[in-house]
Length: 466
Ligand code: AMP
Ligand code: ZN
Image 1: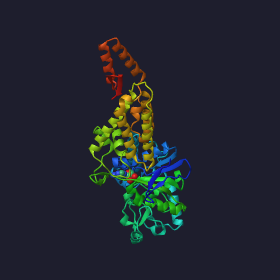
Image 2: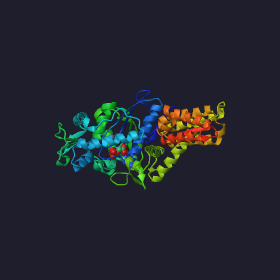
Image 3: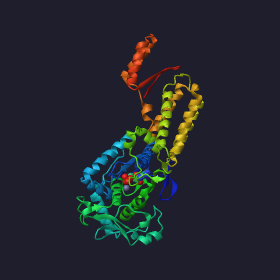
Image 4: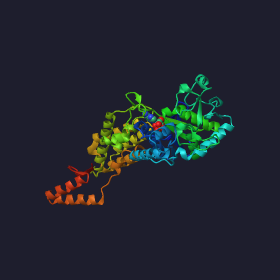
């Protein structure tokens, strides 16, 4: 078994060989907490959750950091507009972010560092870069000197001509395009536009640039070289290119071995973005009656390097796919045939499991993994009457395992009746046996009010949580 990933650095699929055997250090650029995350952001975060889960499923001890960008151009601008202190303003969206990822069944990262808690570390790196000749102070801040770092452009594949054209310029904004390559801000000296946001530093009062934040937090928590670093494709330039330049110039060591980037969630061909106004938040969608589980399903089941077009049909399809899975689980739990195991069916399951796993090993190919799951479902319905309870139990156990990677089947697989519900069920069985239909109907209605539907089938009484 080996896992392979598409590495943006080499633009090719590579076998994952971690720095330390059996371990994986993972840094995922987190949300800028200036607003609620939109489901485009969540697509990238869900891909990172799948990556985290799959590494864990394959036995790696994952050490994961997901940062919170709580100081940058956008957070400052919005907090001032709202006449709020930066920390109070960002706190609202930190909380919202955690609510969203919990609702979407994310695995927890080991650390969620906030940039404002790592200003000291950022200053240390900036001082080191000045000392080594990679950075210089100007009247409005400290800048990274792009022309001093020979490898600049290796992640975004920027040609040297573009680089030279911009090498003499300076840009103080956090975000800019490839065509604007120029020296970028590590430290921004205080201006009136920053209001009360400022920290003391050897370069005067001010605040860090966005890119230095992730270099400081990742190296502090995961070491100077890390295995994997992720984000959305828009992070490749300038954010991750600049992180490489700052970190490698400072340490003289490779910063990251594997760079993985999720392609955008789009709406009518355009990137979903707050600035374009074409976005939905998880909150909007749940208010409209869609479940977080359906949102998770819709966002996770397209391969992360393929564009995904958002539509309400996508959510409706997610709902019906989940219903097919739930019905399958329901049917498996109610297989009553106590006969011996059908070996041919067990063999089919082994093949499905192996396809599921090898697909995820291959750059997290979830589309193929889901195909294996749905083939198994079809096989079951084609041969339903010959499936024994033992076959069903084997499949349920596979589903439970598969769900440690997928995170959207769990409720239905693990669900059991409470003691009270079991007692009611037994009471109803007894009433039916005694032909006390009034009582049996009464108990059925009580259970229905508790969200449990009963169905009398050829195989006996079955139940389903609604
Ligand atoms: P931000 O909160 O703007 O820092 O973005 C958080 C993450 O969401 C980053 O990794 C971005 O690359 C990613 N992202 C932003 N827009 C989209 C989108 N439309 N589709 C997928 N990922 C996105
Ligand atoms: Zn980052």
